[in-house]
Length: 468
Image (cartoon, rainbow, N blue to C red; front, side, top):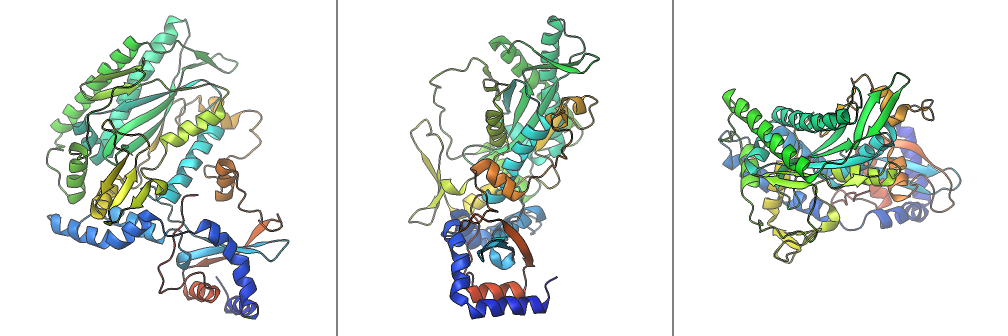
């Protein structure tokens, strides 16, 4: 709690030296807070209209589920000083900074999803994945299957287990042909819900060691197996397709029907999955992939690999799997007020950007928000928490790190140092250490401090935090 005495003393010090106080705080905000991000502008201006249209279109009149509304409302508060901040001061000079709170959501907020992406990748590389050769397996589904997976997370879990069972079976057969006894496999899977065109596209990015683990009695050894051949990829794709269709048939027989969406979110998911006004004929790849196959809408790609000693490439690959659906740097607003999305790669017809009406963009984002309390990163095999070999395999329990206590969540400052080589806790004026001296929640006290410093006025729309 903040005492009235502390607030009075703080405001009094700023009253005595108002220009100095602004000079101490302003440089950090010139760098970190340019104009409001495009995404924040669009949500702030059109979110209420989007909600009203959803209520009008829904049969029950409630519109979107509560978790979708919470995601948008939390995003509007993310990185805004008036909703609370931390005050830090240099130990060697009077330089200060104010750091705004974040929403910590995982739907589409560019800042918080980037932090989660970097934290997940750092955790996997430091504490889970041992130093072995890895291969990325990317599995995509037909449109009708994507919609079913997006609406039913339990169904998604069943399909993922069936797909990994096929991959694990192939690895174990290859290991037994080489005389490897009792082979064990493992996988870390990123469940992505979006495509490159902001369309709803549930698919899997699975990271599997290019080999198997076996218990030798003196410890666990990793033994490589031959890479999959094109025939192996073809057979695996067909087996995965048949297993998925079997699960879907049982799902329908159990009384679960995905043909008639029941609420407005499912209706928009169905529309986002089956209809795409930006659809175009795919261009033929300049270099055909040897380890990729397409079978009646099912696609399996296993070309990307990472060497055992290239931990930086492994971390980049993990970040790619855990990335966000949209980035602020790729969004802009044209003269008509529509949102323009820059594509990372041109389409087959040469287009490099897509244009969305503001309401259309928000409706697409609503379909991409994952349901609450459902994991998007899955661990299977030897990487599963309950597996008996996990403690002997994961990197975080090796002898050189056994004395260090590992944490699931890295501090924000540590992530910035790791990803961008920026030390936010070092003063840019004297290179001293920045220390937290106060945590100020959203209150009248925060408004008084910010109004006096001229950093943020309640009558003026505030500037949100950009990506870290």
